[in-house]
Length: 188
Image (cartoon, rainbow, N blue to C red; front, side):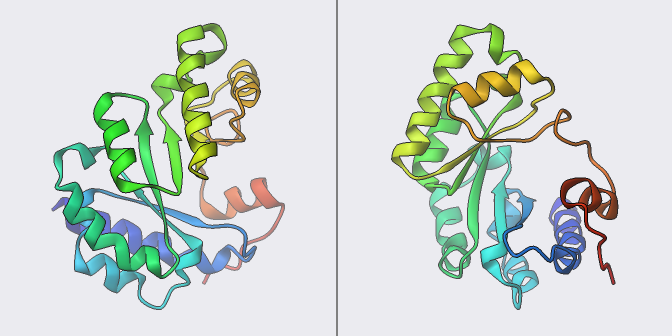
């Protein structure tokens, strides 16, 4: 029932999109390749401003038919949805997936960002990926940033965006909006 569960979670998340009044804020929805390729996802997204949606393909992408996935998500991308690839940096297959899918956002796996300030090899790989993102005009986001040393090292490598406990912990939407923007939500 993973497809049904993912679709239910996506539907719930889409219901909160209206609370994100700042038009520069987008909603990232995680989806397995199976869900991203499914016609029911396209139905769920129908009527939403897809320029405010990022479809984040989860790590199971290695086991899928990439060509089928590309074909299935192309209409969403043409309508403005952006594509993110999760967990980049954990293996060769992730790099292959990145080259084939041509994402708009690359999310560096926390296994790469963890203690990056103390590991020249991690710094070199992150720097190479930052250069790749610059050349391909892709946004890079470091996941799992939990301390200032990691954040400063990533900034020094040219990585401008990060997520992790240092920057904010998971919270109900109203609390997250208050923390991030100092705004009260207008949830239905």
